[in-house]
Length: 513
Image (cartoon, rainbow, N blue to C red; front, side, top):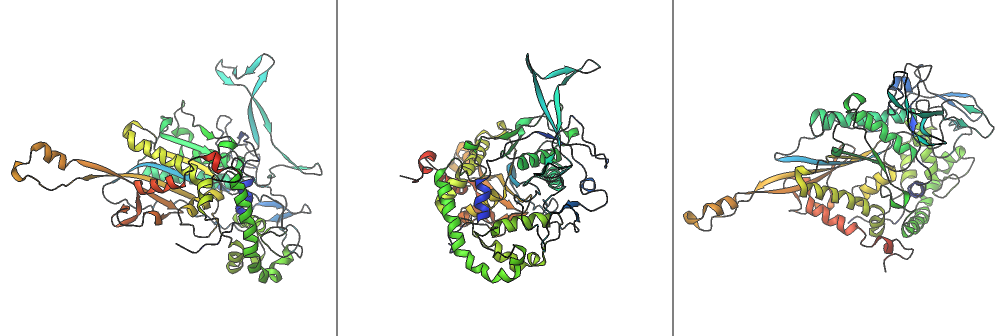
């Protein structure tokens, strides 16, 4: 077992704690007069091309603190796109049964205003949200809900109220296409659409695993946390996976969203007081453990922080600084050269995700239990269970926590659209029992001895790499010669250990009795 430090980044804690502060808004993409991008009113998942999204001149336009325009530098793509061609061929005899996908949302704006003053001069106002600014909502009349109307041709259509969302600044001014803090940008919409399109290329075009045209909604499952940037990312992903012409007219995919008290796609401090207490404690420990290691950076970076030192619990916090830097780099915005120095960035980012068993149980246990239960249902019901692919739109904290829970976290914070897949395979094997009665062995016993038995395996993949899980490293706990294929029985046994037996009791402030 590796030596660990019981610390947690403030970035990790704050993202978890803020995950329930926003509500879902149903948005429809809007055509921009300066582009040829068209978003049909009956297609809420329509998107623009990358060229249209990034401005027709080839450069994105941002507004600095004083209101002047700042030209973005060439975009540097930090993600690892889903690799269709590099997807490994399965060992002989393995058959894919079910796939669970967990993907971080696309590129977004920073969650706070930081580093806007010279010499950093990162823009305060991000004009990168032009694609989706039109809302549609069913209207209610004095006589009750009105949901249908008739067109001039006599056919029934939905009666909707159309509005446009515009960000208003504190001085009362407004800019078309300006983003809110923490909002999915046009680039984020494009990258999540691309991810969905690559899922299609892999699991439909190459593997022929799920249907080419969506007609049976029971074969797929889509779920998001209740935050606009994840729900909108999932809309784009679904549209990439199943474009309009690949959806049966009667098959409208449902995007599943849970109430905050029931959410398990992230560590739920909202519903689990004990987890919140642990997170706060680890955040304090992170400051004590890492602040000293940041002191030697003060001369290099404090000039960008109004003279303040960079600290885990500083003003701004180190996590907040890196949030702004990551968002800027992802959108091709020039950042101070010190924040392009890997040796400096590594020091700032080196805050350890919590590794204690209790936090793993309370943070990820219920999610993993849900996943293995669905897999077990597939194993038990076989072909009578049509569910093949489950896609979850979530956050960087969940991606990091899943990796850490299985001891495969690489200490690198997950990029936008970073993803984890858990693939369930089956393998039919012959039971070769010895001849116990020679020639007198009955026909029935010979048939029984050669009857096939089915073994199931799970493969975890993160950013196009197979993960070799320590939990199934022992001989007999994985497919012989292929340690990345963990026996389902071993995997499930570990998940049982991680699943709270009494959620309410374990989440009380004092924890387990």
